[in-house]
Length: 402
Image (cartoon, rainbow, N blue to C red; front, side, top):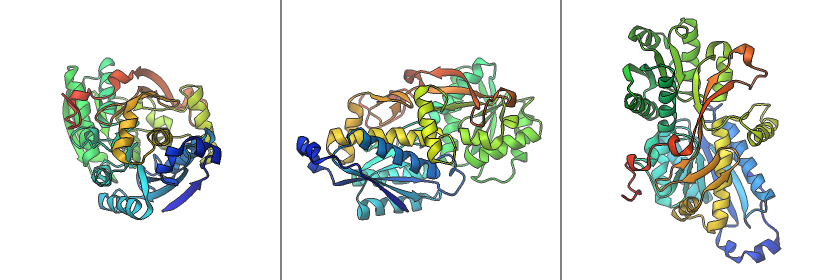
């Protein structure tokens, strides 16, 4: 674990103007917990820590809240027990107020209950499974950026509009892959399409040839890839080598810009992806992207990393308004009013803890269309916030009143 302290302490005059802020700790600590060394390290990893640091700095520059902000970081190694142990230690020993990112759904489910029991806040920035704000919802959790329902349903709608009405899935054999395939299939069938079959693979599979052969033999028009990170990179590269893509379209249900960079436009061109953020969408996203790249080796931020910045900054402003770090009260404050977010657009937090905002469907550019390394997408459509996420009544969250 590493820590970086930020001098976000307001002046004495500001403290005097807001005496209730004394009820807050002198330092509000936020732990960024994710995969720092494994298959999701490029998607989140150290870049998410940098994004959280930027949020703390921008919060301070805007006046702060009468408290310091300290960012901690931890590597859960994609193991739920390790993640839960880190979070318990952070809260019990270090006084951590909130945990951000997660990136692995299995880890998220483990720490979701721990954080609820401690009445702190889970900033579930990059948790893929929509079950987190469905049957496993907690009054101390806010799920940000994306989830399997948003990614799967957007992909199914985009492909159905292009005639892709039959699918074969290659999926992670764990919670996120199951949820992603389920949510994409539900939307596909709702629109009149069908899934012809599926196959599951373990995290870190070395060879996808047998899975691709099954997908080819199915005759499906679309191969839905319900995985991500290094596994997604491997399967797309191998699909290009086996000559799959000229005959069947690939839909990466959860691909990020670093994955496209690793695959290369020659192999990834034409693939459909859904993201909450792309650095080249507008002036605000471009400005943030350039700032981040200056801090992080000339790499543009992923949606995961931009989401960490977005949610940590929102959290700090919410804590400032709520004057507490008690998780249930903080999340209630999140729900109180829409958030004007420069990276994701307007954000509204619902009763189930799902943060709702627009999502974007992109097509990966061909090499000759790209003007630079990170110029990889052309937008197909924007899905408005009202349609981008699962309807509130359909998730099975116990917090939702009939």
